[in-house]
Amino acid sequence: MKLCRSKIDIELARKQMSVTDLANVYGVSRSRMNIILNSNVVTPVCAGRVAKALDVDVVKIIEQ
Image 1 (cartoon, rainbow, N blue to C red):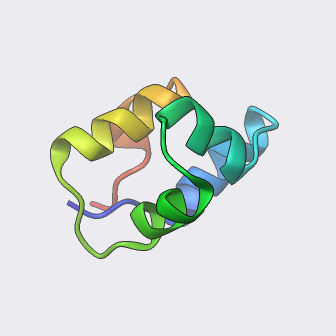
Image 2: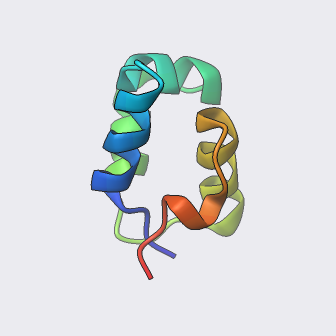
């Protein structure tokens, strides 16, 4: 499963959040969050946690 960075950036803009804010809600450092967001493959659990941190459905942030 791959996260769609552009969709995540749109959700961050809608919520007026930065990657640092997202990392804090997710519970990791900013550098680790950037690694997650730029990964080619993430686990379903990881995708679900990112979606939960953004308060969106996971389908909205994955590439199809």
